[in-house]
Image 1 (cartoon, chains in turn red, yellow, brown, purple):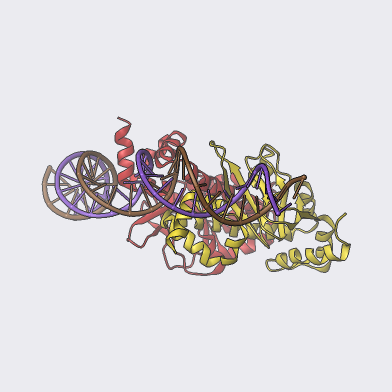
Image 2 (cartoon, chains in turn orange, purple, yellow, cyan):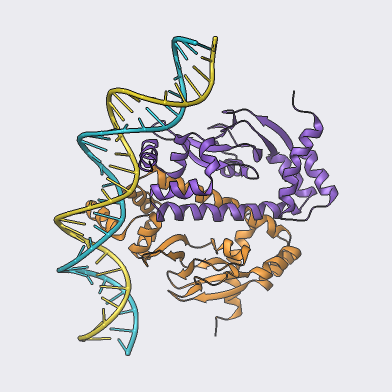
Length: 200
Length: 200
DNA sequence: GTAAAAACTTAATCAAGTTCAATAAAAGAC
DNA sequence: GTCTTTTATTGAACTTGATTAAGTTTTTAC
């Protein structure tokens, strides 16, 4: 059994607030959105998506920290994306092509998500066309951020990337296991240990 | 003086064809699009955008090869994106925030682009709302491709990336200077020379 | 509260890729 | 066509980060 309705509704307001930062919503739009979006609590280490499944939804993080990762040829988990409050996480490739995903989406810590099912998303675009614009703008940001990240990878050494990340998100370092951060930043956990040792 | 109108119109059909692969356009929509999009021939090495300028348009490559690059702290050009036929190229970050760009967009070889001015794009979304959907879908692909690229960078060595790229785009190797490809793939021109030497 | 599992550390060795500098080849300019 | 500029090659010394493997600390499960 989930939490009572008024709590759910309260949390879902975060999503409405986020959409409202990009586009104008009428009260009717808001009601429509709330009526089709699902709420879910997710326990630490639970998966929203697993490799070889077809990704059926886009997930908006209401609370907590999630990650997208894959398993490389050596069997090691490689984190390709972190998502925290107010970010969407999904595998667009799998969702659009209806093809098996190569990714897992997992809760790094217990949290809450708003789920926008693929089919329902299409219906929502019919009912609230401005949502098409909202996702266009969100994707524009995501794309720019991904290119920016490639630039960081090319421009800075592993140590510089770690220092940059830890100065931008100091509280994050406490919340996620080091091996996840290491693969996100593009190096091994051993190397991250070395970096930390050097700073003392 | 540019080419005669019927030639321009012919080339612009590539854009209409591309949009039609993602969304349904009425004849009226097509006319509207063609009436607001500009056509431009661009000579090799000419720039569509320069560092510190505010990016005012999105460019659709009708013909040729373009690149987006920045100049790093050592004064070296670093190519972050290539765009060929049927791809859009722009700096979304600068365009959206109206902030000075850190990028140059340049013609690698003489080519042709369709220009969608930022202001005109907004008007176009009013007149042909389905264009909002078209760009959402294009951005979805761009974002997925950027994440995929991060994965390649992490997963494969420089040599593997070069081999993969040259098997995917063999004709490309002839068209672009090696130093541009080297920075796109994330290593130095010297290292690319060594890779090629090894293959003989 | 204790055992087991998961996460982190340390150190030695090795490989991938950079830097610098000098030379060679190719492309543009007049 | 020749001169100049741009682009590509080669090699030696160096740096960053991976790998392996053993040991330590922290977390989780019952």
